[in-house]
Image (cartoon, rainbow, N blue to C red):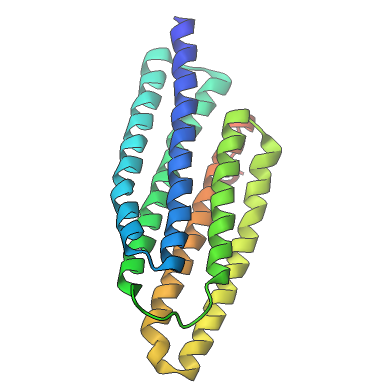
Length: 216
């Protein structure tokens, strides 16, 4: 019985890592599609979102099987419970990458009204947060999980910079308004991805310590 239990816990970790890789790829592809105005890649991202949704369902099913059939206790129970919470945020990251891709399709063929360097940095930071939060989950590394939470401040700063720039562009040239709104929405999606990565890290901390920020 224990051997089967351990195999299922190992499978859970593997599927969590796989889903983490999928959403990391979605984030990276979203910014690449935006920078290169790649409509084909944007459509690919939107199609791949279904695979992320399927992975979420698979993990939820495995978690329920572990909870109902194996009845884990202590650390294992926290690990499984945290995974159930984490996959919700992970699935939403996939949704937001697909939302960015949808806006990329609308912007196809337009000359950008500003450089995308801050958006590219937001994407890099967000993808790194996702990767590190998953590494923290698998290796049960409390310091790495806490470091992820600290990175969210940088994404918030970048969003504020982008918002300020776009407001300035609209003020100086109202014809920029429509594209500025689209770019601001993309920045908001990246900010939300950072928030979801922070949520994931907080659940990693719970899986290790039994304490969650919302419970303090």
